[in-house]
Image (cartoon, rainbow, N blue to C red; front, top):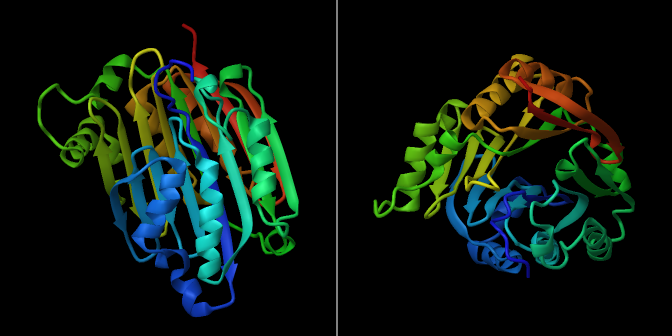
Length: 340
């Protein structure tokens, strides 16, 4: 395995299920006991470090990123050299025991900073697609894989989706997902995600301090934040706001600094919501390069993104769009700091 720094770019897997039992559907995947979740995460090679939940879903901060469990939806996002796709088989097994059937899968990721360090099945996007094809049930017959390019080869976007006929017919979702990947963070701001040597604070206490110190708590003041700081550096948080989540992960080391932000919103939200959110995120990290992937059935959302960040000194360098059977449009934009 190649010697490298820590891989910040995450792999993200989103699975949707359906069931015939309304009692089970009400709680669904949330009925999975913690031991079962641990077995799933063991297959991926990560652990839970902190958790929070509300009436709608449960959110877990992991040793490598995040896990969100809704009654009929699960999202796992992991970084480093985790083997995320190995979570599929145990998750399908546990969901089947609850009377749930998989109806949709979406896998996304950026371009790894250290691709040669990735283990199977993440050695290439081709291998990932083969693994997905072999491990998803046959009822997910509408499948598509795509690599969305940008002018910066280091920021390509990889997407695989699979769904059954029923999921396509019923797809009328007002929600959108925004995935932001930032590299070359401002060095002064990145230093805020290092713990002072020997301060003796645990990850929960240090995480709360970083949340306030960096202004992350102001991105969505209405959210309940579950945060964690890693020793000697690094930071993760999940925010829960009613039925919506947001999440941030930071790898602050010089030379391969990286931060991600992800959130969900609705096309019926105030037009300024996502714009104001992205402005705050950019101001927390001041990246030199940023990519934004927007997944939505509406074409309205992604146009707000460039308008939000360009006044902050970033210019849109490329924009790619593709259509996926179960997701609607995926729009991938890349931005870099404007040359003076």
